[in-house]
Image (cartoon, rainbow, N blue to C red; front, side, top):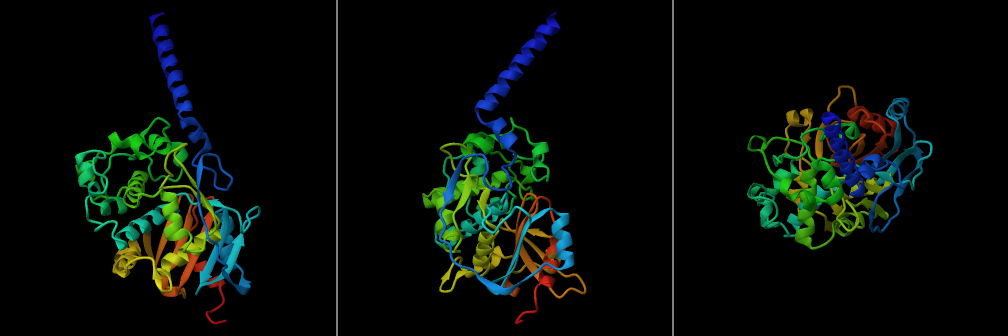
Length: 378
């Protein structure tokens, strides 16, 4: 009888905990998953205002070659687009997806946060990436957090002891703990986890991919600009790039947007944004100071580093060096869960965007896209 009583108490406590989680929105968040891949999606959203500009389109447009079609189908791709020399050369969509369909960025938006941090340096809002984050967020979290350089958050080397279990796994929903720190971050924003922003000395300087690093940078940007993050993105990148209106997930009613995830926009908008970043803004109006643009795009990285893959300032870098392929050289890319990709090759004036359900082969996808295009000048 005593055991049954203890069991009953435990069950009651568990049910009470589940009820509290439900009222706080945790179970809804878990059931919604990481929000749906295609708009409309459940949740609360902020509008990122756009200023759409026409895109020059090649005529006739290129079509995917057989290898490209094979990769498209095998990875359940939704969209593939290529812009070369400022002209949209290839545009392919899966059944049910149209040019005006908004798709979930997942972590693609992290790279835009990284670009905005560099913009803040360019505009003098941040003195240097090596300043302690506490310089701009005084009194927030603990002493170790305050002393951590901004660069460490950009490079995912802050050492924060936050998402160590399942932080960068493909099947995030299977590893998702609705009572954990990440869930608290999702529903309440950075302020809800302030007491958990502690670092492990042994992890400082080691690469550990965590959403919380981007959340810190989002909060930092809002502080130094005194502007909501969605308006900042619109003003500095989205509208200058000529992108259309987009929708950005909020943590909860009345809280900030999720800096690390879930901007719903069309693949064509991501082509525009990739082109804008790759060309460092528009003629006569550079987006970044030249040295910062070069660092953002991994200029100066060795061939060996690129071959191994590098996570830079919230953007990844690699190299195309497969024998027998015409397309060669370094490339930078934004990446989101499920293999959402924005490839950028400044030396080739090439931008490619891929959206889909599952990861596609990173290099083979880009090779197949290039090989699907007519030779330059034709």
